[in-house]
Amino acid sequence: MAWKTPSKDMPSGIAALMLTLLLFGCATATPYQPEIAGQRVSGGYSDTRIADDSYRVHFSGNFLTSRETVEGYLLYRAAELTLQNDKDWFRMVDHTTERDRRTYVDRRPRYRPWYGYGYWRPHWRYYRGGRWTIWHPYGGDPFWYDDIDVRTVERFEADAVIVMHDYPIDDDAERSFDARQVIADLEPRIKRPEESS
Image 1 (cartoon, rainbow, N blue to C red):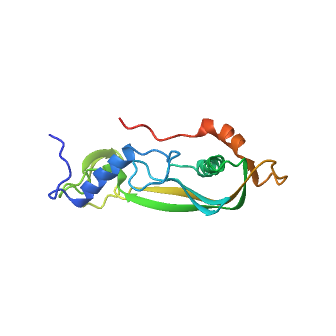
Image 2 (image 1 turned 90 degrees about the horizontal axis):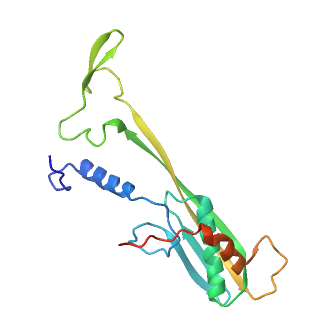
Image 3 (image 1 turned 30 degrees about the vertical axis):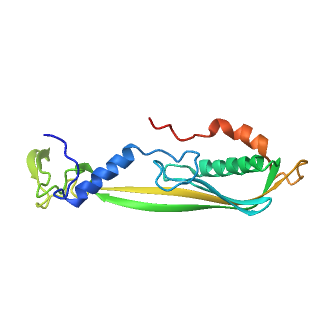
């Protein structure tokens, strides 16, 4: 049987499932990249200048990107901006991280993608209690019929307002960061987008 692409004749559920499988097959955590609509992998950084020495910095991750990574990329972007503006260190005067958590319930995941294709439903014989039994979704036997898969996914976004300065660094070490040191410390953990061939 030849593989067919989704068409008008194909049930919309099957077409949607095929698209979802394609997307999940290529899914990867958000790399360190600018946030631009239509990218292969969603998310990234954006920033807005709010004064000569200040920026609002934002990093948005997808559902495969951890909170630690989102916050690390935000800090890295703040350090980059500081050096690009010929400054030496920055202070975070405001910082927030938001979490978007969603739960999905998938009924009968064992039968995907075939369950519900036209009028076809799974049915088979199995041995239980010393005898052979026939299972069919229209029968009363609950064997695997009410099987469900519950998944919870999280997305994180972080925002900060930074104020950039020249040396010497202020003594308020908790919110003050040497931009060159941040770049040196975080660079080994920065994952950039893969080059498309």
